[in-house]
Image (cartoon, rainbow, N blue to C red; front, side, top):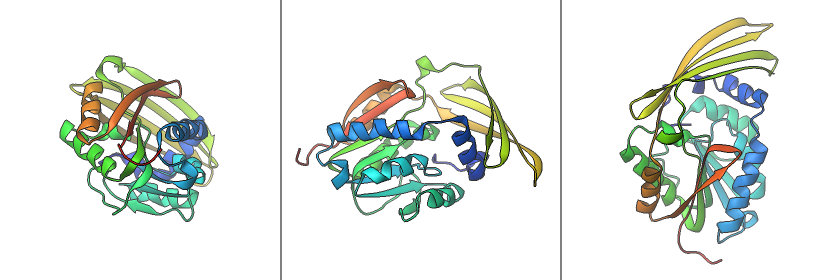
Length: 250
């Protein structure tokens, strides 16, 4: 989850969780990509290491990744999202906190920030603070994997999304329209949720996400003392940044 909880859907964690599950987001396949990247680059094998998932949301990526690490933890700004994550990740430590300044007092073999959550940061100063904080929780020889939001040159203004899913005993319809708003994208989303016991409800949502330049991301990683590369992957439309902290033993 992002650095702001103003977005309504993150207070409706139950709808968020059921919608993306129902739409078929392949958390298992996405987690397998992350695990492979960590295995290739980390100084310590995942089975002997630790994982921190930042902006973990309802814990779907965390649930797929945690079994491959000796220990795992999650951080998110939204208490309702963490409540669902606790049900999907029993026994995994979860902390409410902002990606820019949470402090756990320890480091991890791998740190992840998925589903373009970092795009909710408003300025390059916020980006620098968040990346530095993630890097500060990374052990020497550790790997940081971040899924960015779109870059300005590959953002498609006017994009319309529409899905109807059946999940959790409910029908959930989601329609969205996204436009350019200076250095950000602005997505207006309408949800209609119907269930036999509660009837029909409708709510709207707005997501404002910064269109950081690729170079702005890369500079933030380097200022945090990390070696970084940008990778394209069919499962991750905006791609992935994979960074390592020097040190450790291969």
